[in-house]
Image (cartoon, rainbow, N blue to C red; front, side, top):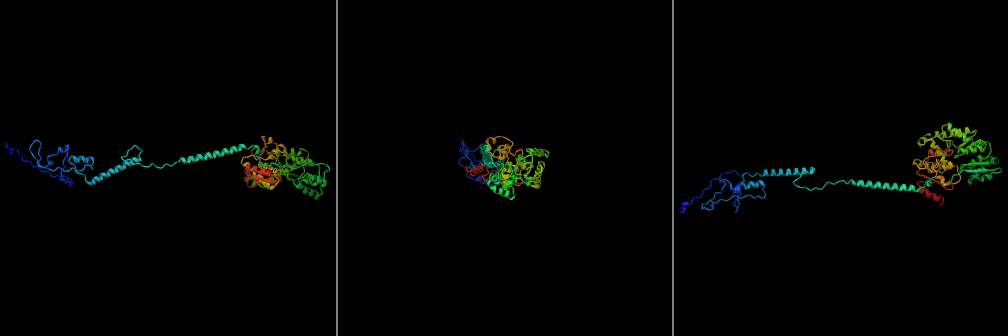
Length: 465
């Protein structure tokens, strides 16, 4: 056979059915074919209608086919996995419009945003596709206040320890407020044959002139009585002259501020107005019958017309009650009981006879009582021991007795003498001061201090220690 007999005309490619595609697909079909493209199984199974139109020479035969350009493959770099599969499989599905792609992208962005929001608001169990590193919220350091409070408490504890240590270093005997110089009574011993000049020499120098003048003006120089007479410190010369002279007016009996029941009994017996011990016995009976808490202090000092001991006691007690009734408002405002007023007035009257000093001393005693401090007045111990002249031994202050106001806080069980009206009024209207200590110098001048350290310093200056 000739060669021509075996030639077969090239097949004319079947007309391709017009498919409705986008302009972009058509453009890709017209793009020049790539030189070497490895066909995928999907491409091998393409229908005949999608094969190239040009003939191609088959291997092992002389058959030839017309040449047809392969469509250009789109770029796979920016495609999703599904788009790449569709592109490689021949683009069976239409390409989504750009508007749909934008919508899908927006949906993915919204989903991502919701997941991130869920991750932020959850307890950490939901994981987010994107890690967002955020600074942790600032925490309030509450421990600073705890540390400051602890430091403050430690500071207060240190102060308390220092105060306690200082208190332990102060001996009970050092807690004193009264003058270290005993305010002793004036005792005048008159023997038979002593004249006015000799008696005046027994008196304080500042009272001698008044004593002699009173005797001279009243012609009482020859009426001086014999015996031993006791007067509170500060008693005037005229009062002394009146007490020791013999005259009809001597029955106007004077009870000096600070006199005890025992002192009054002695004065009455010396003047022959009552038997020894009579006034003491009648005073105890009077207190019991009138329901008084105690005897000493409930009788006001002053001058009275004496007839008998019972009448004198009644007049002295009524005089005290009249004074308190006249100052009822002050009594109520003081917050003190009548017992306390009487006790304090009798105590300060043993410390001073000066009405100005009495108001200051009353204020200091009241300050210490309100602070539950021992009032520390030596006069209460002197009343208890009966020692009004000699220095008090240190051993006496160390005893825990009812009238030892250096060791025992508060007031003693009773008054320590007859208070004067000035002392009672001083308790009802004391000075305004926060001082807690006082003392007298040799001339009777009063010094006060707010602290114990200042009190010791003043004591050293006054006594030149």
